[in-house]
Amino acid sequence: MKRILAILFVLLAFVSCDVVKQVQQVTNLSKCEFKLKDIQDVRLAGILVQNKNGSSDLNFSDGARLAVALTSGTLPLTFNLNVEIHNPNAKIAGLNKLEWILLIDDIEMVSGVNEEPVSIPPMGTTIIPLSMNIDLHKALSGKSGESLLNFGFNLAGANGKPTRIKLKAKPSILIGNFPVSYPGYITVTSEIK
Image 1 (cartoon, rainbow, N blue to C red):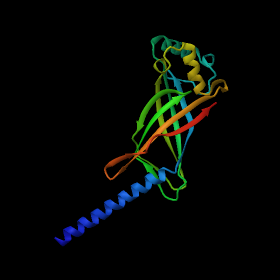
Image 2: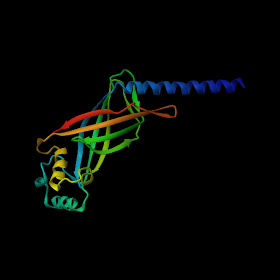
Image 3: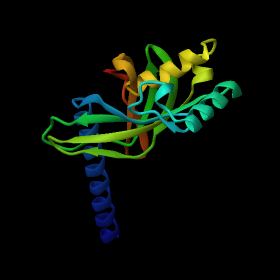
Image 4: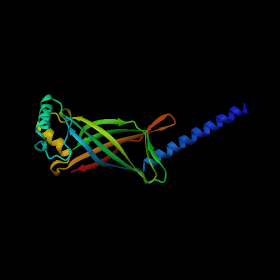
């Protein structure tokens, strides 16, 4: 019986240490700095438009694919948004899940959840890549085809016109087996040119 109690005590101490570490990680996370690092692989209807100034920079085949997409009623815009988290603490910070909402030029575009656990090393930086998939016809309903294309090309950096990006992020961490969400959203803004 004494041996069983000793084993239970050791297990309880181990679980308690783990919970303390998780609480410390979430406390450290609250001091972390979030920023939008960059946007990569911008595609309209599957066509890479990164570093293009407009549809005139596309070849005939890609231009035809965009025209078909515009008339089909869906215009998929996909890209990767890299979120940088800097940990100024002397100990590790972490999160188990990141809920997010993306706004472009103050228009809510898409929301999602990254369920990959993330650790941010002490005095270090980690990048969380978020894959975005937006139907511009739905997100910008009522806009002309030209406006939809301009929106996609501007996001890719065309013509040096700035695009305002805002990400609302809500990290969560497991403490024991219980998920604990950050109170409210962390808002991260950037202007892409």
